[in-house]
Length: 113
Image 1 (cartoon, rainbow, N blue to C red):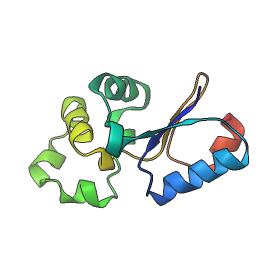
Image 2: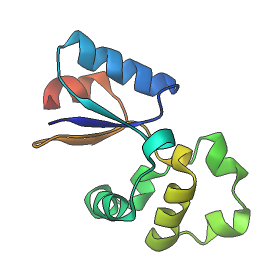
Image 3: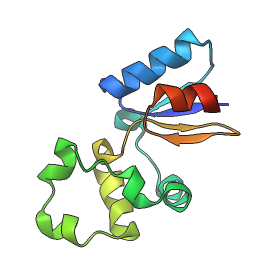
Image 4: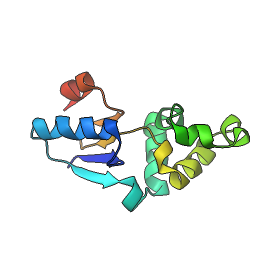
């Protein structure tokens, strides 16, 4: 099963969902705002992608964080930040049995799915 993680009102999520729907690729949508994200999943993603890849440093959620927190980030603090502020997680994260992708790039989706 394929799971797409994100926030429903995010434009990138909307594009990814439309792409998956247009290609008739079945997926489950995991809404961070409703379901949150557990620590174990974030730990696994950090091992897979690195916390630097998972954090969207261009978004407003990141920019609103205290400089002290942003300047001293490590995997442990990144996981805490991502759990408390799910909007800081780069979107979407797509996980299936054979593919794991952070972000939406149509060419990547086309070649990997």
